[in-house]
Structures are given as structure tokens and as C-alpha cells.
Length: 112
Image (cartoon, rainbow, N blue to C red; front, side, top):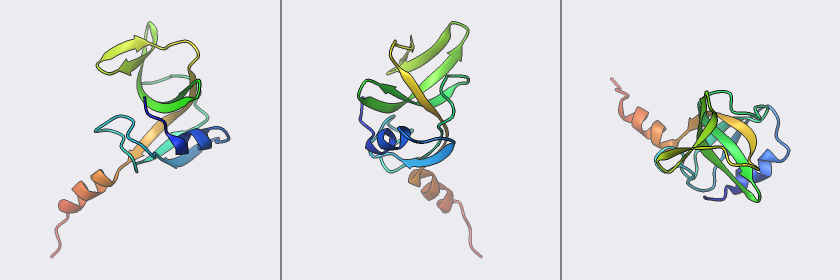
């Protein structure tokens, strides 16, 4: 798991919706270094499927969660696992803003 310095320092005191830039790739192909995350720091439990900021000991990062009938599951590589003990949900990632998306959209714009 990768350390996220900016998320770790912001999450300690953040409330409400905040934009946070990630310092390292957390989920390759989906969340990369430099991406901006819009995080709802008032969300402290898994209530819907999606990305959540979590803290486990000294590690803080982002993982994909599913809200199932059996309780929350976290995607670990290619397998859904029960939420391990000691995990604190810091917030829900409402949106991911990437430079990659902006580049792709810019290619589709026609002028003239």
C-alpha cells in the first residue's frame, strides 16, 4: 500500500467537501499521482459502493469498497475481502479529477 502524504495531513482536520491532490499512485489506472480527489470528510462509514479514504495505523490511502449484505468489502488486488479490524474510514471520494481526462476531452473538441 502506498503512502499519501497530502491526504494524511488533510484528513486529520478536514470536514465537509475538500479537494485534495494525491502525491502517489494509489489505484493504478484509476487514481494516479497528481490527481485531485473531491472528498466528503463527513462520511465515516461505507454506505455505498465507491472509493473511500481509509487509515490503518500509520498508513492512509484510498481503496474501492462495496456495500454488501454481508457488510462492507474492500477490493484487495482482484479479490473482495471483509473490512479488516482497526480501519478508520476518513471520507468518501465523491469525484476524481485527472489530467488524463482533461487531455482526452480536449482531443474531442473541434474548432471552426
